[in-house]
Image (cartoon, rainbow, N blue to C red; front, side, top):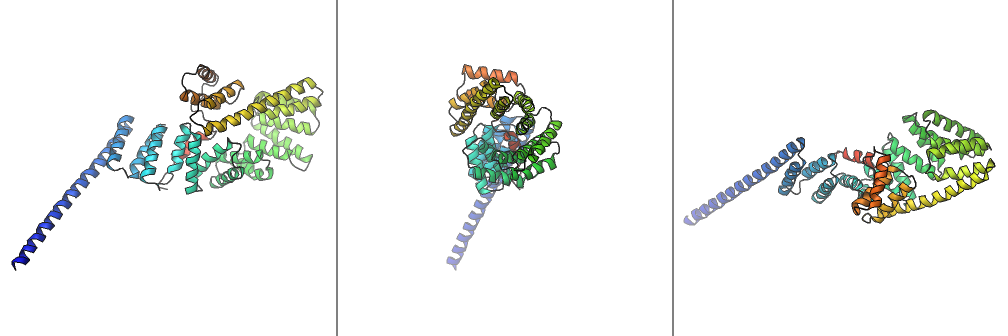
Length: 404
C-alpha cells in the first residue's frame, strides 16, 4: 500500500511539474507573440508618420522574433516598394524566399526590384524562375520578353511564344499587344500581325501606330498594286490621327517608290528623316528615291548615312547585350551612353546608361558632362530605363496581391 501511495505522490509531483512547465512555455509564447504584434503595430504607425527608419527597425525586430513568418516579410517588402527603396525591397523578398520558398509571386516581385536597381540580367533570371513556377504570370512574362527584345540573339521562338501568351492573358493591355504586333512585323509575319493590330484598334480606334503596322503589311501583300493603294489609305489615316508621325511618312514614301512617284517619295522620306533621324532604313529608302529623281549626290550621301547608322546600331545592340551580361563593368554602359548622345539616340536610354556608368565608376568627367547635356535637353526625364515598359511592369508587380 505504501509503495502505491509513494508512486502516486511521485506521479502527482511529475504532473504538477509538467503543468508548471507548460504554463511557463505558454506565458513565454504569449509574451513573444505580444512582442511581435507590438513591433508590427509600431512599424505601421511609423510608416504612416513617414518615419522610414523607425518603421524598418520595427519590422526587422519582428522578423528577429519570428524569422519564418512570411506575412512580416510581405509587409516590409510592400512598404519598401511603395517608397521606391528597391534595394531594401529586394532584401525583404530574399528573406521571404528563404523563410517561405513557396510564397506566390516572390520571384517576379524580386525581379521588378532588380530591374529598377539596374540589373536586367538578374531581373531576367529571377523572372524566368517565376515563369517556371507559374507559366501564366503576366508580370514575369512581361519583364522577360521586354529584356529579350533588347537581345537580338535571344530565342525568337520562345520570345514570340511569351508575347502570344501575354496577349492572351492580358487581351486589353495595349502595351503588350503593341510589343507583340511590332515583333511579328519585325519578323515579317504580317498575316499573324493583322488580328493583333485589329485588337489594338478595337480597344483604341485612334491608335496611329496600329494603322502604320497595317500599312506595312499591305505594302508586303502579294496582291499588287491593290496592296500599295490600301497601304496609302492606312498611312493617311494614321497621319490624320497624328500629324507628327514619322512612321506614316516613311510608309507613304515607300508606297510612292512602288508606284514610281519619285517626287512624292522624296518629300515624304525627307519629312520622315527629320522626325526619325535615328532610323537607318529611312536613309536607305531615301537613297533609292533620290536616285530615281536623278539626284545622285544626295543619293550617295543618304547611302553613306545608312551605312554609318548600320554600324552605330550594330554597336548599340552589342553593347546592350554586354551591359546585361556584365552588369558590374562600367566600360560598357559608359560607351553605350556616350554612343547614344553622340548619335542623337534615345535620351532616356542614354541617361540610363550614363547614370549606371557613373554609379559603377564615379567622377568620369566625360560621363558627367554627357549627363548634363541630356538633362538640359530633356529635363523631364525622371526614371530612365533601357526597357520601354519597365516602369509600367514594376507598377503592375507592385499591385500584385500574393494572396491570390
